[in-house]
Length: 178
Image (cartoon, rainbow, N blue to C red):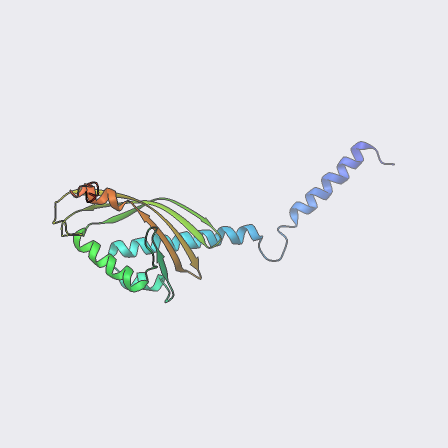
């Protein structure tokens, strides 16, 4: 039987040998792959908002595949790529200095959640409201499904009521016939 100091010395030598061997060969850990995918997907989200703000619809189109679907709560149908291009053009005609400021990105698997605020100046007609020169802020939440570097599904929830009140539209109760 070995004494305690001899056993500790043998254990120390074994630990030293193991630490000198370096990392094990083989594929990276699943956690490392998941982290890298999440970071890649968050970068796609950053790129799409940067392209929108720059007016680079070609780049936006590269990030949205043919089967893309924009989903908006309260809307009965999904919207496609063509709709997004037209909506961007119309919005930027009324708010040419619009920028998206991303405040938080959270990714897991192929899903990315985004909290952002848009900042803009109302310089053109929008939804029947003539230009007011008002500076507006529009908080928003988005959830995107990203596969192979493209956004396949995009859920958007933006404070459109807040936007409309900032440019002077008033919310009035619906009148019922008596």
